[in-house]
Image 1 (cartoon, rainbow, N blue to C red):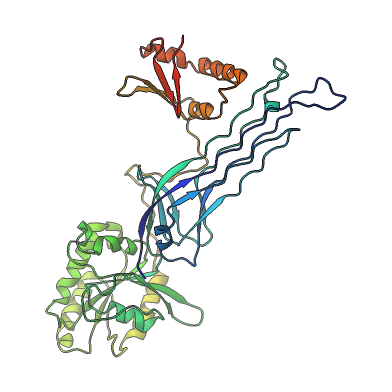
Image 2 (tube, rainbow, N blue to C red; image 1 turned 90 degrees about the vertical axis):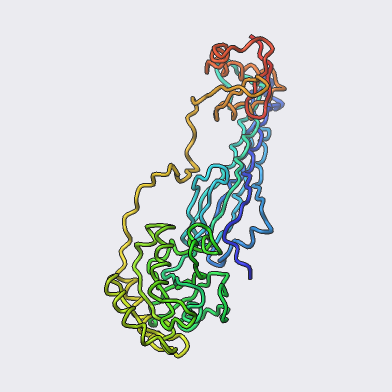
Length: 429
């Protein structure tokens, strides 16, 4: 199975239904008032964590998600139905980002967790909502509000309690296969494991933890060399790191040097990861040379202030003690306080609206005037410009917000073009 841990998709929430313009026409009510109902709300795009998923492979074939539109309003004050949310299932550990800005929209970690990623448009109001003492028979209704659309970057970080790190062919796959039911591919060549493998390790009848076999790192992994960069992110969520070294040095590598090099890569990638509790695991103790290297590894562990366990995945020597010591480390682990992010990234709040009075005016290469403002763009999208009364209402709001005055201050002249959202206007004083 190919492991997909990063992908891009697009989502489009449903548009709101149009409001209805209608009047009562009962037999004995000759002067019936407005009775047009509101449109229904468009479908939200909602991401849901599904524990049955463990990769982003499905998104390779399904990259576009579109919510249903709300129903239109009807006569006799009948409201259109709201569209049901469009549910997008993702595996636990999925980070959802805006592909254009890099803004973090949601961190999907727990089973059943939901996050609204794009809001459906609200339904347009029917003409009954615009009746007032000054206008008892309004003939216009609002169009539905367009739903939000986004281009998204999805990143998957494995949700494991314990991460195994080390150079290729130090025996990580063999260890996880020996202590869990996971069955990774095992062979005598580098980068055998191209897919992070999860295994559930049973400590006793009531206690277990999840172990992740992270594919082998090489020097330069934090800079993107080899395959390491793609997989370092999977160590981020682990609470304890098992640092596996080949105690025998049978491939001509020095286990002490390997330890320092791997930790240098972790530190380079993330200081937070480098601070995770580590257990140094001297594997392949059944091979020649391992016994000679063990005292040096013991000195290293004492200097680093971390536990050392000598094991052999081939003979199962020391694996029971390794599981018990790892479980103890997990129990002793205390999550450090979260540091305030200083990179300007914020978590998206789907219920947070932009300041309605925030309006900016710019000019494009053709010299046209571009008016930006969420409330104004929404007003344009929901106005039926084919209705004279709706057009007059739009012009009134336009003047009340002082847009005319601001455009004149920017030097607009009769006949100049003004763009707002998808609409284009010719300026008339």
